[in-house]
Length: 442
Image (cartoon, rainbow, N blue to C red; front, side):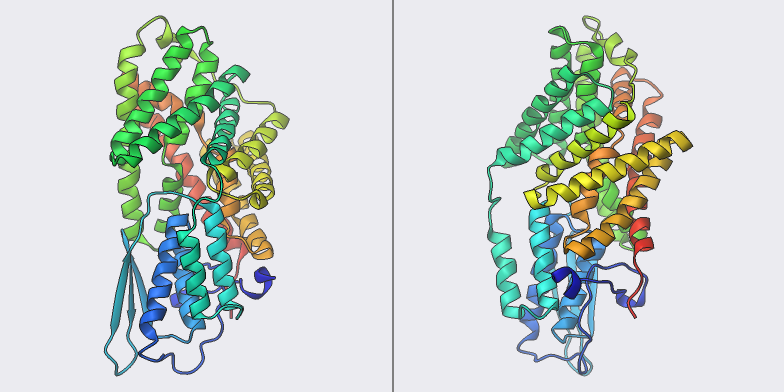
């Protein structure tokens, strides 16, 4: 099994950094044939780029590059990450250094199926099942492959997730159905804007405006304020760059300040787009036909314990598909949602603090994902991501903060800060759980 032969833990650069890969011992002096060095560097750069595009953590990308080059016999390698590039320098003693770089994207996109395939390629390389040429061909094949399934499968998973978040936020069954339908509409509008090259800020603002406008239309059509609030809470929290906030916390903790700074700029820009879109539409509709009272006066009620766990599990399954995961990953996603939801509910009852409860749940989830990933040969993100989005998103707080922004209330920044703090706590917890569940290789 790849999980047994190819995956384990290393601590690169002499520091305390978790990695899912165990490289072969470096043989010789770490100097490779000068004619082969460029091909090795190009391979690991392409591998790192594809891992980033699929949603791998920065630490995992670094570890994959170092493990692969070490397995291929290349030492004397330095790696550094700028905000949008990977820099490699191979500098053997007495030889002219060789430097390469590759532009990367850190926009928070996730493709769990592609990430799992890349994970297996690294494992097979380290286990000796692939050589450099074979591994390069596999990465090229993965990079050039299409989605492999209709677009509506992923969007249907997102619709299920939106419905479950609506219920978790205290919405009604009718609101959950409309939340799912609205997710499809908002997703397709965002996709269309992206295809014609509209920048992410304007796309996100338009999606937020569309979300609030749809809520006003639903209320005017007779839907209750509770149902509308749940529908809006689900779709607004899914517009928030949750995964970028989580990754930002992970990168800052694990020693990648430039990547973290780049993510911080992205998060600020996208949150600004959401606030702008919500405020513009909200200023037009909140004072009309009683919608303002419904938007402000709603009181979110938590689901009963059993239904909360069920919604977390179903939402995690939907999010696995929404982020490109295969059917094979759905059971692991469901288990992650159940675990995160259970710990979160128990900690809320004990601590009465959403950020602390999210921190505790994410810590347990991160530890569990590290163990499960090693056993099943899957990247930890394939389990942490569904668990986080299925059970831990602060939907009601996001909704309340954005509604207050639309109203122009002085309480809005504090509410939004609370939502972002809860989200950042998730990233801190995932890293902490991963570190607690692993030990450095000797």
